[in-house]
Image 1 (cartoon, rainbow, N blue to C red):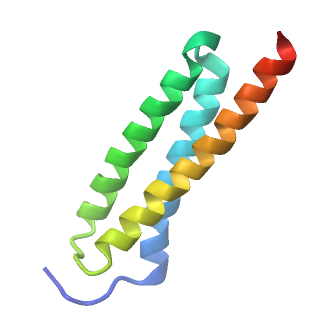
Image 2: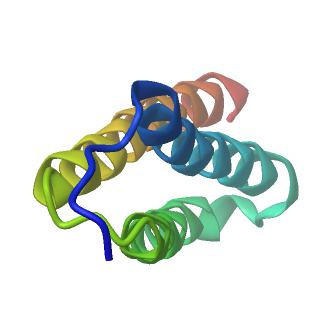
Length: 96
């Protein structure tokens, strides 16, 4: 294990990857999930992205800044899924 700090591009690549997975999950839920189960699937997407964030950050083998990187990843996914839930809710409100 090395104590050299991670480069900024390598740090953000893992974070953006988790955010992209959250965005992809939100799109898949909005398109394919039954209407009555969409919010359930969004919460499962958040759980899956949280686990993915742990895997991505543990795989870097860098203990310095682990909590910061993990927090940024999870809070970003939470924001993405919050926006997706608001959009899904508004569409459902105006549809029926």
